[in-house]
Length: 247
Image 1 (spheres, one colour):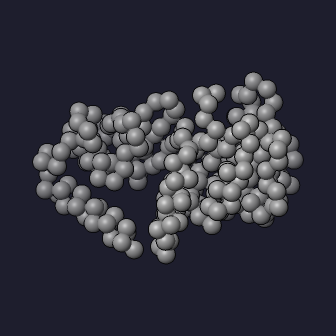
Image 2: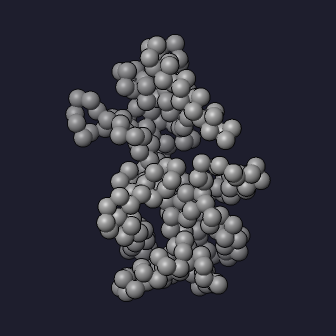
């Protein structure tokens, strides 16, 4: 409704998702439960539409699409896969890319570039990077340029088991940390206009866990307010990110 034709929605539950390797299916039936998340999301879109919009859900491979098509005979949307000769039809109004993976990038870019002005593309739980091992600079730039076309309208990403980074359009990005005085509850540690990550997120978390206030300055409290142990931990994380970028 706000005019964005390309959006990203992320609901990365720790039980089903690893930020590096993607979907994790540790229990029997986890894969189907993971795909059911996409149906719940699309059903909510359809039920909240003023008119009955024609929605197409595109899954990474033909096997998953066929399985879901057979199981979801009552679905209010159509199901396709990136392996199909023509995944998107001209009459499709909303196209949902369900959990696209790194090998899907080229196909998704082609589909995105071929969309009509009347069509909207939403990527649900995309994972278009996988550690970047063996990925050339050209591919990284293609991915970054492509993702730059999308507005993140909803995001829920866990920070280990201590909190989460949250976004709900049109609000800012928010960092929530577990409340040590109220198990199962969370407190707002910081709010930023752009997604906090890397050293900035580390500082926010350490400041919150140490009882400081990360809201005051840009990127949280400065390093001088951290204890020696926190400084060592922060330096170790920075080195890990640096070594990963070299690989």
